[in-house]
Image (cartoon, rainbow, N blue to C red):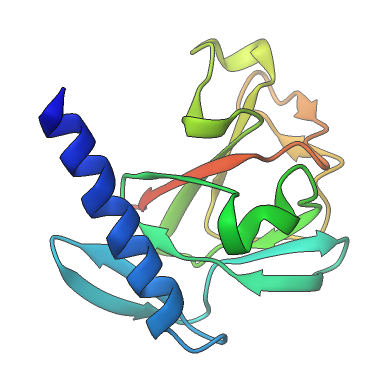
Length: 145
């Protein structure tokens, strides 16, 4: 229990440090204490077609909730730009919680690319599209190999 809590606090401090240390136009990717700049950065946008965007922090393989300075984007994300080196999953719950069933629609996984609208996103299930507009509460990104 203490180990999980310590890990959570360490991750939170790393995210807070990345958020405060990075200029607004850069996304820092943190892996084992190493910071790297992404170009282009991960951008979360409230409007369609990349309007009203924020450069979002990325901690590889760690869940980030849309709270604190990201709270204005909670349940408001309508478009994103994901660096090609990443694959990101967006969840409609905090803590990246999902039922684990791909067709449940409580999460959507996107390859690095630009997505001008969350109204119709690929769900990964038989080509079915999912409306994930204004539903994101947390996200998790990994390197896309």
